[in-house]
Image (cartoon, rainbow, N blue to C red; front, side, top):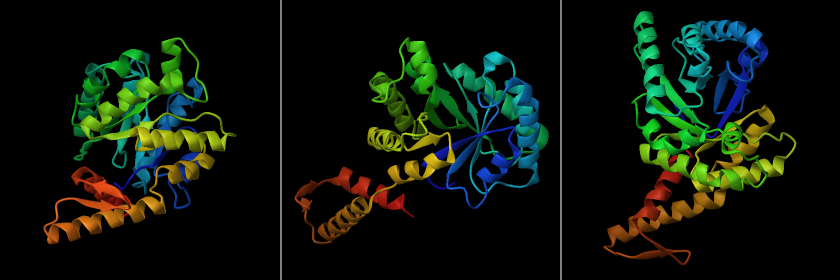
Length: 285
């Protein structure tokens, strides 16, 4: 799987949108076919059927996540039975609050994989969106080898916290930091929450830049027009690439000449800076 910067939510009962989300014209690096909030209760059976049918018809060209209904709804098993087929990259489990939630979903996946002869484990992406979930983020992301990533959900979190969401996001800062630390410690994908104002492109770009600086690797989109903004913000700039190139080249030259300390553009370069430069250059390939 290639690098993921943007992940687009798609209502799982909308056939044209589901098909379009994974075609060659789609700019999103990954998609979430949703059976949860984006789908009315009366349409959930149709969403399950459409997603399962689409996966059985051929392997998608990009990673496909399916967001299933929370365990508390008693619909998770029905959701999984409908969508667990080759081509499903990961299941998104929402409102995760402990490793027990991950264990329960993993057991359901294992049973279905065995029944259907699926040899490659389907991944789990945990969404933490309550105060308890945020505080247990490290426990959650280290609870199973199926965990491929963790996300932060702001809307339910602010509801649980007893506050409202602001454009500046000060009420989310601490929780975002805890989720990033847990994901980075576990070496998994870390995806930031949605930006809900479709008409505020500047606000989206600013939040993306802040999220990337904080350590998030990607961000969810709720509309295709948000994807280019997210992709640009989570991609290295040409200036960053140029600096990283100079760092790697200068360090290699210093090693060949047995020089211990070097500077690039007036900045002291030590091993962590070199490793960061190498990772940045690798992400552009």
